[in-house]
Structure formats: C-alpha cells, structure tokens
Image (tube, rainbow, N blue to C red; front, side, top):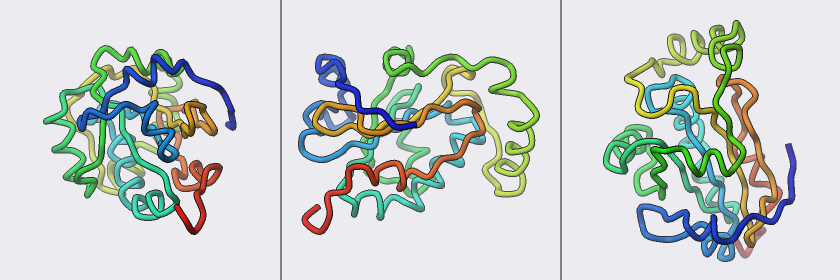
Length: 182
C-alpha cells in the first residue's frame, strides 16, 4: 500500500529511540524504515526479524535507517535483536501500544490472528523454518506494520491484513533510495 501522508511532527518528535534520537529528526537526515513488530514470542515476529537481518545491509546501503517499535522493555528487545543478528539497531519501546494506534495499527480479530492461512504459514515459519514460538511479550492481539518516513512524511507503508503477512522490506524502502550518494 503506498501512501504519502504528512505526519504529526509532534508525534514523530516524541518517538525516541534507545539512542535518544527522535524519528522526526532522523527522517530529515535519511529515510526511516519504521517497523512495528508483533510480540517477540510470535513466530511471525521472529520470521520478520530474520528477514530484516537478511536484508539489513541492503536496506542500509539504500540510504535508509532502520528503527523497530516493540512492546517490551529495551533490554529484552536487545536480546532478541542480537539473537537475530540485528546488533546495534535502534528501537523504541511502546508497551502501551500508543504509537501502534497512532499509526493506524489495530488489534487483530480471530481470522487475522488464527485463521487457516495464519495456521498454515505459522507451521511453515515456526516448525519448518525453525522460528518456533515463545512467551508472549506484549499484546498478543496487536497487528504489525511498516512505514517509510522521509522528511516527516509517510512515503510508503505496509499494514498487515493477517498476522502471517510477509513483506519485502527492501522493496518497501525503494521509494526513497538515495542513489550513489546515499
């Protein structure tokens, strides 16, 4: 889903990473791939971390910064990021899911979370690909999404229709490639 939407600069300014930087300022330096995760015990969250780790070098080489939003404390989040080879990535703790809500990410219904397609993909990602399942760390009903923010505006986005949706993060940031100079 493509969107070009000017976002509330106050909201983006409130969103501080573990490094103390705010998303608004970061978006004026370079495009920000802002990834809202499901809880870390979720198979699909773990799959997303694995996918992003595999694409991280290319995402950053495109000129984009990577920032995660999660629902747990920063120490626990860093253990998961490190486990998936995402050491040093910037992230934002949002245990109350306020930022999720302000970005239009809703609580999933039964079909979105537990429908047949999610069960099939869950078996594939959890068992066959080895991502497993774990303890729920956050709101198990919260749906994920990803947004590309540049100069305070949403340039591209993907809002999951199903918890099992899998996206190509590198393709999402291509709307803002900085080219050779990036």
